[in-house]
Image (cartoon, rainbow, N blue to C red; front, top):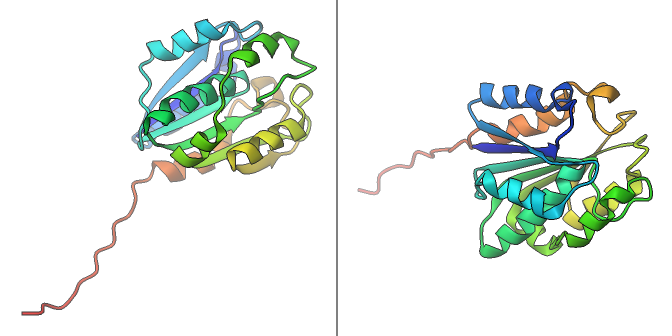
Length: 199
């Protein structure tokens, strides 16, 4: 199993839950790669796309994607393109996610114009889809995240007073997310039914 954690790179990235979650994933026998995207304060679409290409991301039934804030935009764009080629992935988690222009974040507007989200492809080719949102996110209103959740037909989870799920919001760990991820890391159980011989 291979897990990708995709987020906007900031000087305080180590203060968030990314490295904590990576440790939990590795402890459970899966691979994990953190992919910090450049310049989240003024993102460039081409730079972010090149960053993802450089990581040679694997898109298959053993792949899980976890994307936070602006990282969700690049992840949805990536998967919309790759999954049209017939691949399927195991799961997608988006946290504090959005897909449209935000009045509180005009610096994302130009980036959003380049994003191609093909919702029917994402729904058909991602086995399980999850969205986490907060009731007090000042930059990404809950209705915007909920609208994206409906677009993806995702399971949605609201965490009270979580802000944007950053370290400064108290999220140096993210147990609510880990509870969902760890279930997917367990190998599927195969049942054998003993039958009597016909001969």
